[in-house]
Every structure is written in C-alpha cells, then in structure tokens.
Image 1 (cartoon, rainbow, N blue to C red):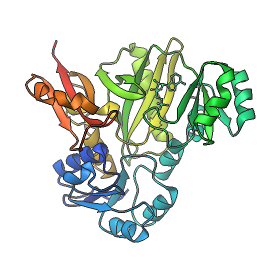
Image 2: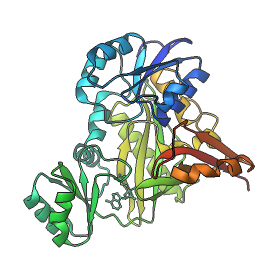
Image 3: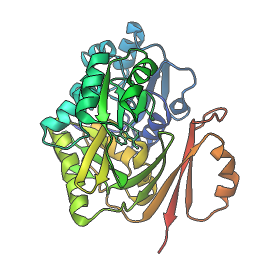
Image 4: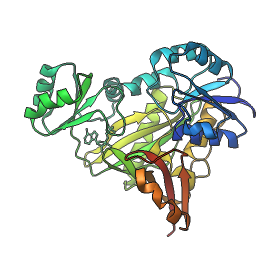
Length: 356
Ligand code: AMP
C-alpha cells in the first residue's frame, strides 16, 4: 500500500445506490472527495458526491476518464462485469481486490472457498443440468433451495424445493441459469458480522447483529445478537479468517445461520452491508467510515459498540411513517433520496437506540 490518502484525494465508487451514498458522506467527513460511476441516471449517491459519471459498464472512454480522476476505486455492489474491472485495475488500485469479487459473485466458487477454509456451509451441489438436480436432491434431501450461481440478491433467483417432484418446475423457474442446490439449514436465527481489514492486515470486527428477513429482504438488525460468548468469539474469528484468506482491504458482511450444531456461513458480501447500518448509531466509527479508512490506507477506527440498537429498513410505503418517526426520541433517520416508493424498494432506514 502506498501512503494514506491525504485530504482532497478522491475515492471512486462503482455503484450509486444508498451504500455509495453513505460511503460518500463518510468520505466527505474525512476531507476526501468522491466520484460515483453508475449506469443509471440520478443515482442516490450522486446527490452527495462531488462528481457523478452516468455511463454503461462497457464504456471504455468513460471508465478511463473516471479512473484518471480518482486515487483509489471501491464499489458498493458485487456484480461488476469482469471486463470493467480488468480495465479499471490496470489504471488504479481497486479495493477490495479482485479475488473477493470473484469469490462472492458466484455461489459455487464462494461455497468452495468457504469450505476450503474449513468453515461450515449448507450442504451444496453444482447443478449444471436436470440430471444433476435429481442426483443432488437424492444426496442432500428435501427441503432444499435451488439458487442461481450469479446475480442473486435479496432472495431473488431462488426456488425452494419441498418435494423432489418439484425439480423440473424449479429448473424452469430459474430459466436455465447456472445454479447450485443448497440443503435447507435449520437455524434458530440469523446473524452477521461486519468485518474490516486494513492494507497492513489488521482486522476489526463490529459486534455481530441479529437479522430478520421477510420475503427475502432484510427487515431489522438488532444488537446485541442472541449469541453465547463462545458463538460471538467464533463468529468474529471466522470472519477474520475469511478476510485474511482473501488479503481483503475494506469492509465485508459475513452472514451466518445460528444452529444447534454451531455457526453455518450463508454468504459473504464484499462491501458495506445493510445489516451494518446500526453502526451509525451504535459506534463512534461506523461501517462506512471504517471502509473509507481501509481503502484510503488510514488506520482502522475503534468500532466498539456503545449502545443497543435496532435498525429497521423503511421499505416501500414504510417511508410514510417518517413524519411520526421524526417526532420519536432516540430514532436516527436515514433517507436515501429515492423517488417514488415501490413495494420492496429500500427507501431508507432508522436506527432506534435502546436505553436500559
Ligand atoms: P441468500 O440470498 O442466499 O442470503 O438467502 C436469503 C435468505 O433465505 C437467507 O437470509 C435465509 O433466511 C434464507 N436461506 C437462504 N439459504 C438458506 C438455506 N440453505 N437454508 C435455510 N434458509 C436459507
């Protein structure tokens, strides 16, 4: 790593959604500028960043100009096309690195990587064709979940198979996309660790949060999570192993199932994570500042948790509650500056600080 970025330096952010927006705000607080690159017009991050480039991922001229205007490049979502990264990487440092993206872009590669580290995941099989699905169902058993290898998020690209007879319909629903079959994990609850690693290899983890999903979308994160001391240590140690194995720089979300047999890794996200938003109200240094610090080569901050917090996403019409929430004590409101609320659209979130 080169020297830490100085005030006035610019961070390039691929993707201009709410995560990019909150990264831009964190960068600005540290005296850094940000430049957003997003194919969509009027991205939420554009309202708070110094510059926005609106261009497709394959616009070589726009990508070159973007890279020339920034000192380091990071991203707020993991599905960036390979060719885009190849070009950008030849021009500027990209953090987190390529391997982290490659591993998390493909559920099969991700599971192979995690189990290769000795971590526990759901049982899984590669499903290149219908015959493989029948064999996998025979081996893993039902219920199971058929998931596309790529481009799945917020529960999309997933079909539950309760009975093996449903296999053909499940294949048809995924429309021929490459897939894996995952055995159904019987968990008591879901938690995640938001972990950060600096360029010098130091790792800092936030306290695990407990997550509740509805319709495949995160609804709430509560800290502290219900975990035994041993589980809490286990969660943090396994997250650290993942980051170190990838020589990772930045913040990562590691999602875990809590089971009677121990922690099972669901998936990793090589970016700031919705389940880490509570850190904005619970810690002196939140996940966004921690990520900016890491990619800028600054020392990681102290992410110790000072409060109990419930983070709640404002999805679709939930945003109509904002006038009431604004009158409520101990509620921190974050709105993403998006247009019309649609069902399933993340419009903002609140952090409710709990007092004993
Ligand atoms: P994912 O997009 O893979 O994180 O899945 C979204 C949600 O579906 C998870 O947060 C779980 O609630 C549920 N889920 C996914 N995979 C499994 C599994 N193998 N067993 C049980 N529940 C799962």
